[in-house]
Image (tube, rainbow, N blue to C red; front, side, top):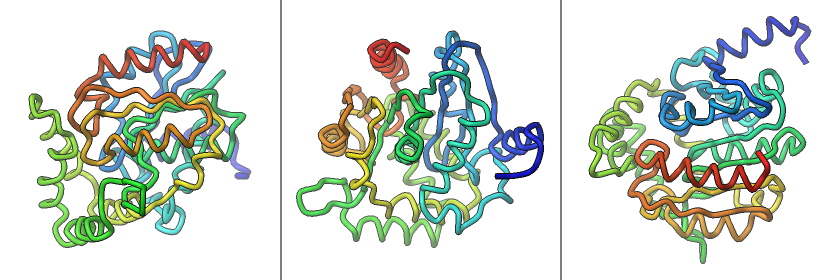
Length: 277
């Protein structure tokens, strides 16, 4: 543990993750964004919950307005490095029961944090999660190994071109093209070298074996039509996580917190009510 005073550690954590705290309440809700994104992506959900929760918004190291100099390729060679950061944020700034809300890869980061420190988290909300993107025997992840390798090769050789093509497809929401443009811009603002490294860690990860170890009450928000995390992925996870609720959001795309915020809020509110939160 660092010997620096708590105030210094807190300030360092705020700077490293561009941490922002809003609202007041007996419980804390922590929002963790997905690949190529930043905390701004929660703008349609977080204000609703800040009415009765203390809400923590932050950028993963290497994303958004985080301290890019803190990106350590060895530490972040697996998602465990980001999970350790998440627990440090919870330990340093959360008060009362904690609800983690993670989108896409951060859903898995949240799961790893819950498994490592189950006593610190009261509930977990996974938005568009996937424990493994690659098809394997009867498991449907949505992509073949060749698909993922091709995706990563294209990203390596032409990151900006890849971003311009993939971001609108990932966002979906054909009736809201401005959201696809927003995600494209977010991808393009991300440091290319960090994005390439994080993409390889993300898309080649496989955390299926950890699913039964997750004891934290969990809500999966699954879109009805999602290119990145197709419906069978959510169904697979719901069967293997011991205390899990699967809610299907009628939505095209991978970001229901942006393209379908009201149904997402309704599903979260129902789940949190059931948990007494």
